Length: 366
Image (tube, rainbow, N blue to C red; front, side, top):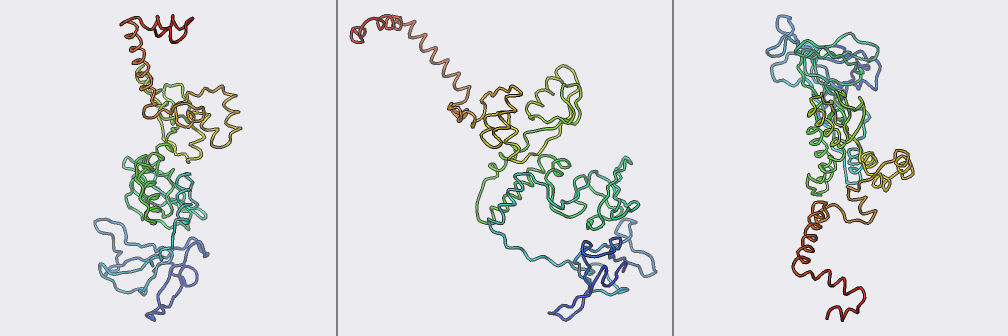
């Protein structure tokens, strides 16, 4: 045992059911001695350190807060023996009222208080010189490039020295940050995470929702993109713009033989995404009406009325189903063709118009 100090890193606990005493590891947040971590090391029969299978890494186990240790220091263990137990938390009662704030947090893309720490690179984990209150985590990639990160000492790490990790893998437990998932694992991993978490809340109440409805909302949340490198385009680094417009600019640049801009998807909450829409009429109908209209007036914006909301507001046919522009233009062409054919057949239309100018309807018909 290393750093097993009673009252500082561990405490004794008596099990009322079995009457047996066990050692409980204390939470780092709730005690002093942040540098001390309760660990267990395996020593072989000849006094040599035992290593993990097929490696030269010593078998050292850092115990998480709340772990129960029933062994004594110096006890003999065999392969597969339980050296510590982590008690499972009783599942909290969650109803739809408790779950809806969780759904709101996901749709608003809020950052959690203590988010999980994810690996920024793929490579081998090692630990460097510690600073006051923080541990230095180093990830060395296959090409020798090193990435360093300082992690608070109270965070419980899931990795040990010499372990290989992949980009986006969890290093320290916590609630996942959707922005980190998007940055490190991509759009598909983020969409899967959001759909799974949102569905969990509704399934708990027996509510069945098809994934496609949630996916449509996520698509709108990922509508914006940020310019990482401008390339040979007119875009600026750090600029945020609609993904479709950015892809059009890149396509034009590649057709002209220029270097395209490097883009990174941006996750916006549904409130922010609604206000960041191209249509200022749609944005003004939602929130911050005065600010939206003032900005639109100052910038001299033009609304092309492409969405549903703005067309409903101005009293036009919505661009869906038979209201699509393609259908409307086709309908106008058909009406124009019918009118021309009618005029070509008997010339009846001009006569009717001529007659209707000065005569009564009956005489015109006669």
